[in-house]
Structures are given as structure tokens and as C-alpha cells.
Image 1 (tube, rainbow, N blue to C red):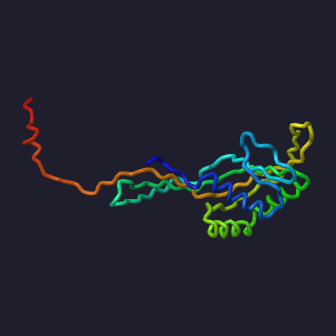
Image 2: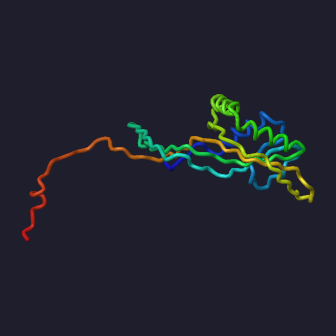
Length: 186
């Protein structure tokens, strides 16, 4: 068994995409940094992962499986997942303002909590979002594209699971040290 990590990035992107497409009318919402993918048209969102920052030290727990050779040790910590959202299209500014404003509310925390439970998705707890900024760009056809961007910061329960061996029994015997290892005459 090799080490595993949760939550997986795909699950985080799926949860965030679900929130975004439920609150703004976009033609596409996709993960950035994908090769051989044409830029979408109309109003769309591109999500770029920026990093995962630890907020706590590790809490370690053990899972012993007596009838199996695979027992585990789990290292959990609270972390913040940062993701940049790029909004494109005629409604980019409005959509960026809607999401950055909503992401700072209890409404959004409750929305993610319900969605996570209903759809068996990783739990994302919104922390905050940066204010939207205009980041106009020139596309491949030398045309200006309307682009607004903000970063969302979300608390996630990160965990790494590794294999762990456990001792199930021990044989202990008492031996005289002097008999097995006689003292030396110096």
C-alpha cells in the first residue's frame, strides 16, 4: 500500500464548479492548465489551483485491522486550498462580484455543507475571497478579452494515510545477563 491523500483535487474542483454554475449563468466552468483545450466562448470561468497551506499541526490516528495485513496510520490537518477564478465574457465583472461577495457569507458555508452531504463530495468551508480585479488579456486572434479574476480561499480537512504495522503478540522471557554475557575480568 502506498500513501494516499484526501481530499483529491478533482473532488475540490467538482465541488467548487458545482457552486459556481449554480449561482452564475456560464457556458463553461473548467480547470485551467489543460493541454490541447480551446478557449471557451461566451461567459465562462476558469479555475486555477494556487496551493494548499497548512493551518494546524498533524493529528495522528491508527486503524488496526486484526484480520488483514493492511492497517493504517492517518495524519490529519486543517488546510486552506487557494484557487484563482478567472471570469470571461460580457458578464465577467458582474459574475466576479457575485461570487466574491457570496463566498464571504454564511449562505455559502451552508450551501457547501448541504451539497457535500447530498452528493458525497469533499467538504469545502469558504474562508474568504479577494476583491475582483480586471485582468484584460489579448487572445490568439489579437483581440481584447474581458477578464475579471479573484481568489477564493477554502478550508479543507486534509489527510494522508500510510500503511502501519502492528504487533499482535510478544514472547517475553527472563534471562540472567551474567549467565549469557559473563563479566570480563579487567
